[in-house]
Image 1 (cartoon, rainbow, N blue to C red):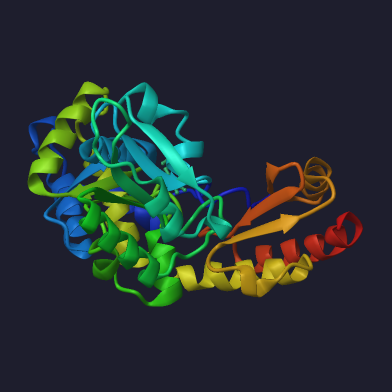
Image 2: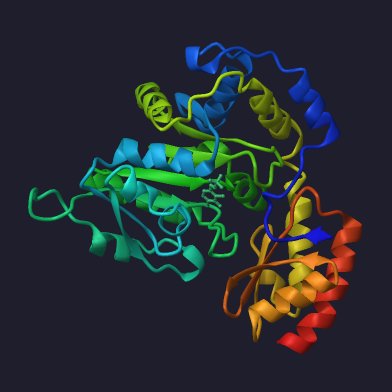
Length: 335
Ligand SMILES: *Cc1c(COP(=O)(O)O)cnc(C)c1O
C-alpha cells in the first residue's frame, strides 16, 4: 500500500532507530536529559530564538505558544483554515480561554487589510482584545502553500504598530525553507513564538518544539507539566529529531518534485503545488478515495469533492510511478 494520506505516516528508518537506541538520556522533568537539551538548543539557535521546549505534538506546541501571547478572555487572529482553528479540537478555547477570529485567505494566505480590519484594541471590559496574530507556513489546509516572506514581514510590522504578538505555526517550515531558500532565521525573525514539527516531512516518529524567549520557555515548561506533558527519558525521541535535522532536510526537494508529478498525472496543475501536498478536485471524493485504495494507493478526503495527496520519506521513486499510473487512470473517470 502506498500511503499518501499524510507525511505523518512515516516510520523511523534503520539509522534513525540506531541513533535513538544510542541516545544518552536523563530525566527531562529535572531538565537532565542531555539529548533533549541538545535538540532544544539546536532548534532554538536555527531560528534565532533564545530557547525551545520539546513537546509530544505540534498541537501542544501551538497551545503553549498561543497561551504565552494571549491571556484568557483575549483573542488570536488567524486564517479560517488554520490548524489552530480547525484541527486542534478547540483546545485554545477549552484549555486557555482564548477565542479566535479569522480572515479568509486564498489557499491560506495572509490578508493584511483583513487583519487590520479584524484587530480589536484593548477597550476592556467591553470587547475581546486582540492579543496576537497566528500565521501558518506552510499552510496545511491551503494545500501546503508557502506564505511569502514579504507578507510575513508585513504581519510583523503591523503587530509591532498594534503592540500585539505574532505566532508562527511552522509545522512544515522545513518544506517552506527548501521550496524558497528563505533562511530559518528569516522566518524566525517575524515571530515572537513559533512551533515546528519533527514528525511530518522530517520523518521522526514523535515530537515538536515550541520556540520563544528564555522566560517564555520557563512558563511553557510549567504549563506543559500542568497538562500532563512532562516526560522523563525523552532523549530517545529527541535523538530521532536530531537525526532528522542532520539527514532529512535537503531531501524534501524530492518530495516536492514527486508531488508535482502526482498533480500532473492526475490532471491537476503542477504549478499549484508549492511543496509536498496536492489537492485534487473530484466529482465525489469518497468514491475516488475508495477506488484509489482498491488500486493500492491511500489518499485522504479533505472535503466532499476534495482529495489530498502528501508525499514523504516513505514514498519511493517506484511508489511515485505506480501512484501516477493509478491517478492518471482514475482521475480520467472521476474528473
Ligand atoms: C500537523 C500540524 C500541527 C500539529 O499536529 P500534531 O498532530 O498535533 O503534531 C500543527 N500545525 C500544522 C499546520 C500541522 O500541519
